[in-house]
Image 1 (cartoon, chains in turn purple, orange):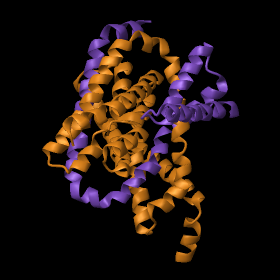
Image 2 (spheres, rainbow over the protein chains, first blue to last red; image 1 turned 90 degrees about the vertical axis):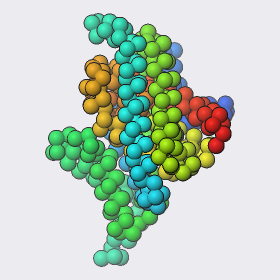
Image 3 (cartoon, each protein chain N blue to C red; image 1 turned 90 degrees about the horizontal axis):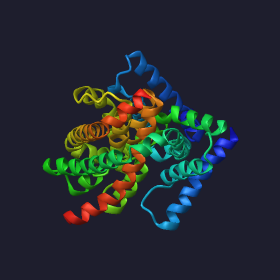
Image 4 (tube, each protein chain N blue to C red; image 1 turned 45 degrees about the horizontal axis):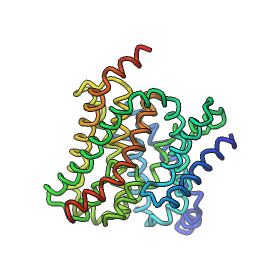
Length: 120
Length: 236
């Protein structure tokens, strides 16, 4: 259990260092995720049980982790009151368009590869 | 009564426990109502917690003193997405070209459509700038909005709303466009609805979750470079 925690936090820390050292516009945890994948690829082995257990536990409660940031909307009542219509219409329309385009492009381009994968 | 309340509210632990209990209740309520994605557990939790804070005249900073310990776990959870990503690495490597094209087109459409629609509706410039990176995971979105001059603290909320709207609309859009495989579904959720979409995709299958995590990471990287570039082209 502790091994898994150390690996995750260690990758996050290394990610923060890399981002600061190279002046990248990316957050540390995203870089940490890439470092974890690179590390696993280099070692070419199965994901250690401790790491998998901690990761599965964290990811199964991912939605909860967004709540504290979401409550932050309460600090913006004024802006929301002024521009709510623009915000609501934009979010709905733009998200729908983005999903449609992305899903359509990927499933058309990768139709053959996806079919292969589902057979195997 | 009031003194009793202040005594407990001052302690960060109270807000941690409350956030978790409210979330558990929201999840239970959501299931009870048939798992409607319109009543996403995060949305119910936000509504309940905000009402409670407003009613008790507690400011967000006081709440966040406790809730930050939950918020902190987003870091290691983001790193943990590397595990499903590694599990499906062979599949991802074989599909690198479709993934690259889908990411570039999806990320561009997300930014241009958000800014374009808000502009057509007569939104203020700072609102438009805050909306531009709405499909990107919140830490990246906040960084981008800071850089181009929007409202960073507002960005987190808009990103979350986008994520929840994405989960609400996903089943309809997938049915309409006949997107019936977990690779494309997961990738679409991760690209347009970042972490919340990824949480939803993990519920579909671990492969959908892996592609959602991949899409979220790559979209974040691409958008972090794309938005400042577009803003300088438009010349705001």
